[in-house]
Amino acid sequence: MRTVYALFVGIDDYPGLPLRGCVNDVRAAENWLRSRSGPAARIRTLYDAEATRAAVLAGLEEHLGGSGPGDTALLWFSGHGSQSPTADPGEATGWSQALVCHDSLLPGGQPMLRDTELGALLDGVAARGTHVVAVLDCCHSGGATREDAAGPPGAAVRGVPWQSWWHTAAAPGARDGGGEQVPEPGRHVLLAACRPQELAHENVIDGKIRGYFSHALLGALDRLGPTAAYGELHALTEARVRALSDVQHPELRGPEDGGFLSGEPVHVSPFLLRHTAWGWEVNCGAAHGLRSPGAEFNLLGDAGARTVVVRDVRPESSLVDPIGWQPTAEERQSAHAVTPSALAFPPAAVTLSGETAAVRLVAEAVGPVPALALAPEARDGDGLPSPIGAGDALRLRVAVGDGWARVSGGGGHPVPELPLRSPADAARVADCLAHIAHWHRIRDLVNPDPLLSSLVRITVEETPVGSLRHSADGEIVCGYTADGREPQVRVGIHNHAGHDLWAVLLDLTDSYGSSPHLLEGEFIGDGRVGWARRGEPVWLRLPPGRSAVRGAFTRDWLKVIVAEDELNIAPFRLPAWSVDAPSGARESVAPAGGGGLLRVLAAGAGGERDAGGPAYGAGRWGTAQVVVRTER
Image 1: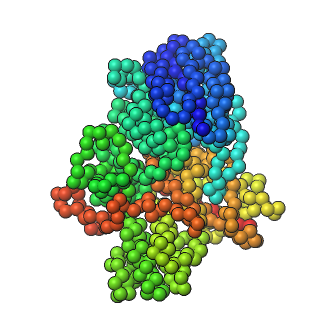
Image 2: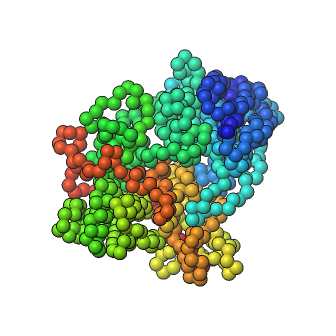
Image 3: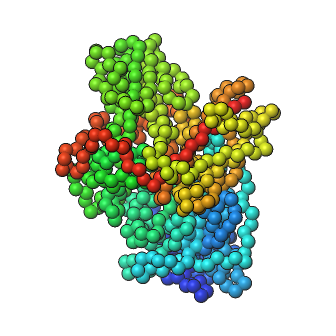
């Protein structure tokens, strides 16, 4: 049975630099955990002078370290943070962060708890099978410092200048993994009060001094419940913090679909609707491939099939308006799962050929899927659904006959033949087509304004293991060693934009999978390099089941997406296509309440769709991509 091991650290009484709301924050979090039903909780608290460096380390190593497989370890820290310049290539911003313990500010006091040290301790616990969550309400907590800066009126910041006399221990050692979506060892989940370069604030809220982030997070937990998915929890918390301060942006590092305090998968849509200071917003924008205003999103799990329509497409999100319904005050306090309607993204054109009865069976399965559209040549005059003009869309083909369907046209490894003897088999074929269309939408994503894209590049560098060369067609070819060892490379993202950029590095495999595991979204400083896996080697390998004979190969498309603000990376996650397991691609794009095309709004009805013009407005985002071929 799961046990929650919790370490609560709240420090107001810093020598010379006191705070006023940190103990309030942590006592409120402790009370929340004690009051909830569910798994047993083992709690250790460290307040003010109790929270020395030695005591915090003992709490991490002994108390949280006492957890085991299937348990949860929770660290909740509220206090000062700090940062300092660093030459560590693993720090893409050029700054290293730290938590400030009570005795870190005493004359001759103990060192701060640096980010690499804390991360290694938390990951060490997670590697044993424990679900580890760190909630950090301090400056630079997407790393960790706080210094004076403009903030909301009356707000105080939780940060101190870096103590430069202390030098950190070595960073944690290298881990195996990389390349073909190989899972990393256990990693902790981070809920941070702000970006690494930002300050966190406290102020009077509901009659008490509280940290904006802790107050918002506990309010979101009360609203959504203790089993809420991290992505939903973060979306609601960030909206509440941003309503109080436009200079503080909470961050989530970890799986959006993991349940809070459990990590167990929660079925959620990759897109969420929330109410913000700017109105209703969906975390889907131009950088996700969304086209012009007028696209619709449907609320999931809603018997009324309520809809919102996009009025303003931004790089990272879109502002939307409810159509034909009025949200309640209670609904404004929640995050709502939504899914895009047809034509929110360009559909793939599907051409069918073969036996008439089998063609009709597949056509009926393809018709309701928004990611797909029958190409004009798919009609045979015998009652097939009316097609949609394909234009320059991705063109997929399905040849049917003898009880089998053969899917082709995708850019990845050939898909095995699929059985076709029933409507369920036909739905499986449509699922495969939708999965491939989703993969291509990610791989082929590009901003029509190339400016920012031209200022970012990806490099793949050779290591002593394996070989590397550039082919005539522009591919980077990495070879196994003579004794059969997998090649290793270092992958860097170079920022020459003149300012910091947020970046995510996607590994798109020829098995039709997409994963951000190489660099799951972080800021890269101007003129600096963000390294995949924090500079550790990226291992390239043939996927399981692929022939191991001489000349066998696989391809990875390494794609970086950059923006000035964080992006929702959930839509970029796609498991590799498998004949044996449903991909979920159909479900993730199908509208609630069934199929149907995007409604074209009449003038004055909340927006219009204009013929012609760009597919979507250019924004401050960009992409770069290289193709890596791994061969024996």
